[in-house]
Image: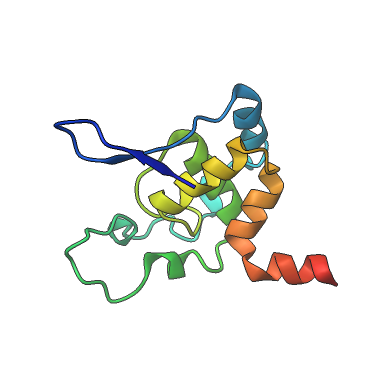
Length: 127
């Protein structure tokens, strides 16, 4: 979970734990080669992936990612490069929480599965 620290004269910003070099390398192993060329959003207007808070949206930008074949690579890349907007079916805030999970020692594969598959991964583990 992201913690907050208030500094006098500054806005409260979330503090995100930094991943170790080993954790970053493990995240990097989940990025497929040439994943960008197979992305669902390739060649499409990507403005919707960078939503503005005060602008109403017709659809959730994460819906575009729902059937993307490279969402795992996209998410792993966004975790490594601290991307803005929606990447790999996650928002910036969601990725902050994922980084926190990784720094707490949760295996990267589990963190990615839970983010991309949600309850499906839990059902699979119970079967």
